[in-house]
Image (tube, rainbow, N blue to C red):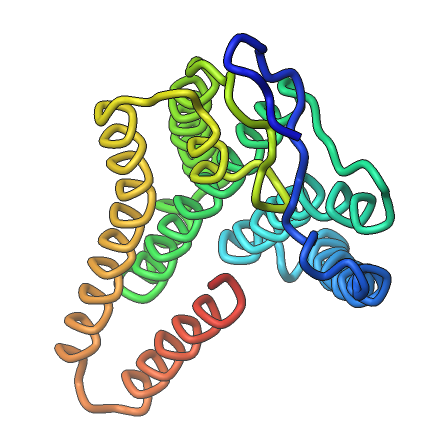
Length: 253
């Protein structure tokens, strides 16, 4: 349905799976099973960390926060997507679209900065093991999580405000299954290069800054390990660092 030029868009129509009309029930089953698996896996991780006092360490604290963040992130997108796969009218209100975009940006950006905090945690654990409990105390861990959430909130607030302060008068057909930045921007009646540049810079910051922090942490780790005496202890430290690095990338990519 196209909107006339003088009509303000009050809702969006998702067209993400319109080309797969005959497979939507099958997709519903597949996505539902994957979603339940994701929820179950994260629930097991969080409950295990909470119940086992031996896991009450900074590394597992960050892991539990990331599992909670991932659970909330999928909750923002997947349930609505599952409902739309079975619904005849796949719509979302203008306000609902803005809330969905803000929430998934907030959680996604926070997730990225939390990975940087985990890299710093591994740096302190390997390079300063005797001071680890002091440098990574409970207050420091909470502060890092709060800082990651503050960064995510700020980026999400700016991007969402830039996008939804634009005029929407042309079309309400959203070629996606949720309110992502690019598909929504394409529906705006007009947008300046200023909006695109600011949004691009913020998205690049969210990706590049945590990546650089993680690289710096692991470069420092490798540099410290190289300076260790060639003993079994240094080999164990190297194996531990590499294993945790691979684990973080495979689980949280």
